Length: 163
Length: 417
Image (cartoon, rainbow over all chains, first blue to last red; front, top):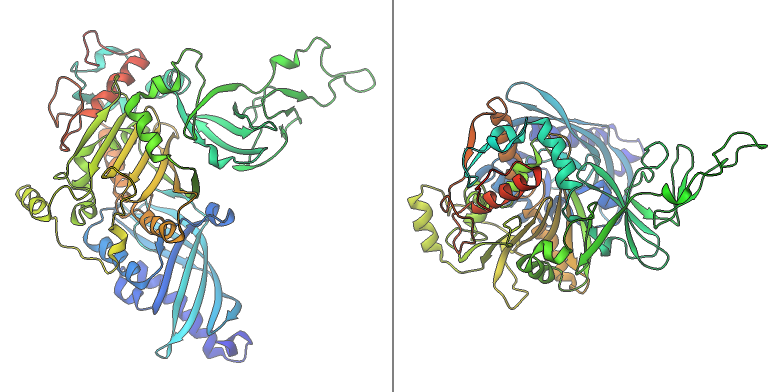
């Protein structure tokens, strides 16, 4: 990772790009178990409306401060929740290294998510910014903390599938 | 033409789909409900704690500024310049000593009075306003405001009764309970639902759907129809409190009832059960208290998550739900964290409430093409509108329609109230 940051390792850079590309592709394919496997054993996942983040307000739309809570979210999505029937399409911009802390790399990447309904109508659902702490675990890159800063905080309809 | 003849029955147990889709109804609602004799929730006093703090909001479609002036007095002003009708304050929130319209720099005080107009006397004696122009008559229009425990309401009507009379004793008691101590704002969330605003107003009064649409509630015993609970309204039946007591049923009783109704009730388990654990905070046992205030506010306690929702119509076919998440200023850190975790239950991504968005969108979509057909509102019986001490009921919807019809001037002779 740090080698990638200094540009001396194309392989580390590719691993980072691949992590983000895989992240979006797995949500879009509704392969949520494989998606969960991109997170570290100990992890957090928060979706925070930009208006809260800018005002220093802590409430999120999704507030998972443990891996268990994130797994519970996916479990409820599959088993209990009813929501608009749709498919997602993530367009994730190039990740940008913004620093390192302890054993983690801090990365930002912009995203757009389009949703398509059963009749083939597509609309822009959300744009935002991922602000992530990435660690190496079991020989691969994993998300330790994922903060989804949501530009589109007037959420169209509802938010069920992960961003 | 919208007339009393649209109601097939005098107890409002049939509501014509047309009422959700009619442009004439929408215009009349703005005029006779939102700008009429109602009190509309504007925000919490805790959102504008300092001198000069302001927030912008809405009463129906009308943009509003709420601010605290230099003496600490709260004002609510129509956010529209007296000159050319432009929105004066464009920011969501901030702190200011005055409000200046960007268009021609007309400047207003925090009490709404017009302070200054550029080139009022013209330049070199030419142009400007007539010397007789009355500055005092061209301020920002003021709303009357009143509060219950820091929940601020405003009205554009000169005729409406005092706030506490309008709310009625049960609602006032609920607001005092929810806002019993100074609150702190944990954050906001917003949702744009493609449905008429009245479908949302009905949904918050519909006790019947809660444990059927929201399976998450049933499974974890957060809100089951087998709990001790019911609905309680004001004297005019325009507001409603849906309430339930924690742990007032058993899993066995629930499984029996839901099993007989062929509804799944016990198949999920959580890795982090804190998400649904109710920490009792008061002498009473309520873990569900949803207070719907006509026309557009909902004060919500679901377990330990506390919130106020403002229903903002955005035209006939869309509604914004603007929700403010609350805690108490003296909450210890672990309780704040518990509330933030339980905020997962509500809002546009709520494990419980996300489903409301879908439910009312499909109701809006499918009802549109057949405006002469009607809904059926008969759970808990038709006829008289009254409080119930059970949960399988949608009677408060008929109370909503009764008052709606009165305000719109389409109340049939002999209709129930």
